[in-house]
Image (cartoon, rainbow, N blue to C red; front, side):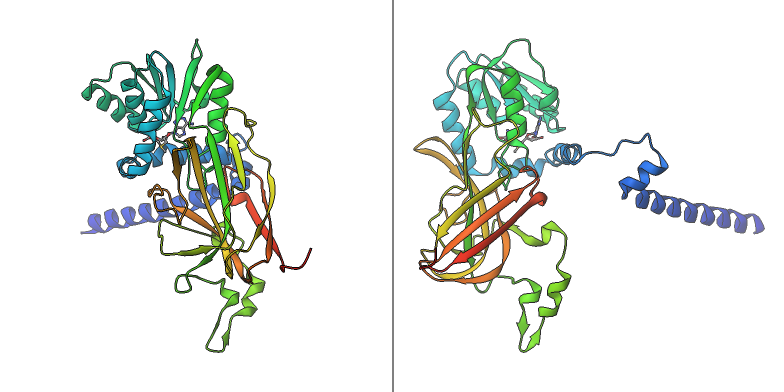
Length: 360
Ligand SMILES: C[S@@+](CC[C@H](N)C(=O)[O-])C[C@H]1O[C@@H](n2cnc3c(N)ncnc32)[C@H](O)[C@@H]1O
C-alpha cells in the first residue's frame, strides 16, 4: 500500500516537472532574444528559413497536392503551355515538381531529360508515380532549388510557384536563382509573364465586415476602439475562394505590376508602387482584391481574379482591408503600396487618398 502511494507520488511529481519544463521551453523558444541570451550559440531561423520549413511540410500533405491537381483551369493551362512550348530534345528543370505531373507532361512533349526537384517529402511519391506511369527520363532530386547543382545548363525552367498573393511562395527569388545559375542564354522560363493586381473593390453589403471601430449597432458606438487598432498584419487581410464576397471593382482593373521572369531583377519588383484608379462604378471602397494573371500566349492565360468566370479555383484571392470610403463615379483613388519583401505579405502596407472628380 505504502509502496503504491510512493510510486504514484513520484510519477505525479515527475509529470508536473515535465509539464513545467515543457512550458518553460516553449516560452523561451517563443522569444528569440531570450533563447540567444540563454544559449548564445543557438541559431534563430530567419523568416526565409522559417518559410522554407513551413513550405516543405505543407506540400508534403496529399490534400494540398490534390487541390492543385483537381484545379481543371490550372491543369489545362499547364498541359497546353507545355505541349506548345517544350520542343523535342530539350533539357528541363521542373522547379518544385510536387507529384511530378508537370515533369510527366514535359516528358510526353518530348523533352530529352527533366530534373524534377522538390524539397518536400512528396518527392518520394513522385518517384513512385513516374515509375508506375513508365516515365523514364526524369531525374528526381530531393533538394531545395537554391542547393541544386548541374554541370550543364538547361533549355527550360518549368515551375508552378505562384501563391495566393503571387509572390508569397518565393517564386521570383527561387526562379531567378535557377535562371542566373543554370539556364542557358536564350533559355525559356515557363510561365514567365505575370500581371499582379491590387484592385479597389466594393464587397457585398451582407458579406462586408467593417473594422470594429467603424461599427455603430443600433446606437451602440464602437469608435472608441480605434485607439486599440490591432498590430497583427493578418487582421488587415481577408482570404478565401468565396466568390460571393466581391461585388464590383470600383475602377477598370489594370495590373499594378507587370513583369517577365526572364528579365526581372533577382530581388524582385520595386518595393514601392503607386497607381491611380478612376472610379467607373460608384460604391463604398472596402479594400483591395489581390490576384494575378500569367500569360503564355494571348489565348493561353491563367488567372485568379475574383470576378473571372474561368478563374483557377484552388487559388484564394485576397482582400487587403481598408476603412470604408464612399466613392462617386469620376473620383480618383491614388494608391500607394510599400513592402519590405514581396514574398512576405506581413510586410505589405497600403494607403490611398481619394480625389473628387473635379479635383487635381
Ligand atoms: C505549388 S506546388 C506545385 C507542384 C507541381 N509542380 C504541380 O504543378 O502540381 C509547389 C511545389 O514546389 C515545392 N517547392 C517550393 N519551393 C521549392 C524550392 N525552392 N525548391 C524545391 N522545391 C520547392 C513544394 O514542396 C511543392 O511541392
